[in-house]
Structure formats: structure tokens, C-alpha cells
Image 1: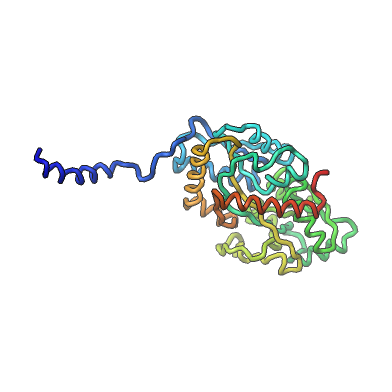
Image 2: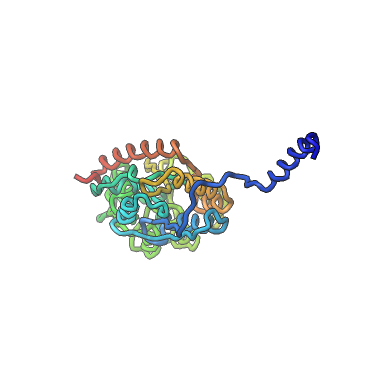
Length: 334
């Protein structure tokens, strides 16, 4: 072949070959067996719903060729699931979805574990809490509920998930701010707390949006206020023309309590950078799908994806904040 003709063909050959190259570089590691997502709570709660949503998205879009299995380990207020991941150091086929309990459970129990024992992967969102009441209750506002609590001969019962965890911390803050006494009733999940409220076995609960959504739509429970500095932004009707954005903040109704919690994904410790990178890439893809965005809107989650240094910095600051809150509440183990 003449040299000039060969030289002219090289760019064309490269251009044709480029069409067959992958759009993104191949990852250095991929799972070789089923991947477990540990949920340290019972089925039906917000953590469980998030894990199963992620499971469906990953499998629909084939972000891994391996099956994804959700495993609920709710014993000991979530400690069983967290200890499982701690003991699984080096196992890159296990993940855990967890919340602020990753700080609070060790603080409340003196369990010899820390989030630094794990490998942070990604924060998928932040979650709000609301003050929910039975739909047939006479309370229309948080002020109504607080007034009844102050006048009650016996403390009003408020349900929540686990003891000395997020819901319990919110109820403590309510007592401190409102000058009222409540009887906190811990359940194994937000789903159970919602069921107990719909059955009128407690006067209120402090569930996340996802945990009482079905009963709100079904006319069994209703929200009085959201424990946040600003109202939620989702304006699509949820039930009877009401949207998440229509729910006032608790502070605007005389209950100055605000609290949000992380919803994050972690791996066991002592995994490789390539293994961590695979899951960071996978969860980043999950966060960009229309199904995930629809899930955020449906459950009124605050979009807040973080990985790498941004996620680690958040964890350090959030741990310090919870140490202060747990100390004030008297929840720290002695």
C-alpha cells in the first residue's frame, strides 16, 4: 500500500473503531456474587423502602450483573445489622443503608463500633420528620396538640422507631421546647408506628413522610407539621388536594424543633479502592435515574447526593452534632 494512502486511512480506521469503544472506561472491579443490602430495621419502614427502591432501580438498569438482595436485621435497635457489617470487613458484596443511627446507636449503647469502621459510599438524600396524628383526632395544629398535652392528666403517647434514636430525640426536644410531658413508645419500624397510630393506640408519631404516606392517603392519619426550618417543596397533590408543600413547619405553629437525618450507603471496612469506586459509580447512576427522582418526590425526601470527601465531611459534622444532642437528652451510655 502506498505510504500516503496508508497514512490517510489511519484516521478513518481509528474513527470507525471508536464507534465500538465503550463510552465509559471499564471498572477495575465488579461483584462476582449476589450483593446484600442490610437494612437495620424491620420491613415497611423508610430505610427498608429506600433499599428496595434502590434494588429495583439497580436491577432494572442492570447497574450490576449480580442479583441485589435486601436483608432486614432489626434486632437491638439496628445494632445487629451494624455489627454484621463491622464483622464483614473486606467483604465487598455487602452494603448497609443507614441513617443517623450510625452515630446514635453506639453512643446510646457503648457498642464498640463507629462509622469509621465502615467504608462510606454515598449519601442518597436527607429525610424529614413530621408530627402525625390520627385522622379522627381533634388536633388541627401543633399548637392544639401541645395545649392538650399540657392539660392532660397522663402524658400523651407518641410512637416512634426504636429507643434513644431519631424519633426519641425529637420527642425529647418537644418536651424541652413545649414544656409538656410525653410518653414515648418505641416500635421496631416506622411502619409499625403508623399502624399503631391509625389504630388509635397512640396519640401521635414522628414518622418520616414515607412511613405514613399510605395511611395518610387512606384517610387514617394526617400530618400537623414538619420538623424543618422550611416547608417541603413538593407541590403535587398527595391526598384530598393536599401536598407535602402545604404542611407548615412546626416552628410556625409554636413548636421550635427542627431535625433532618441522612440516608446513606456504606460498605464494610478494609475493602479496596476499586471496590468502593464500583459502588460510588453505581449509586451515582441510581441518583440520576427518573425512578429515583420520582421516589424522592413521592416520599418528600430532600435531594442531597454526596460522595467522597463531601460525604466524609458531612459525617464528621453530623456526628459532632448528634453527640451534643444525645448528651443534652441524657441518652449517652455511661
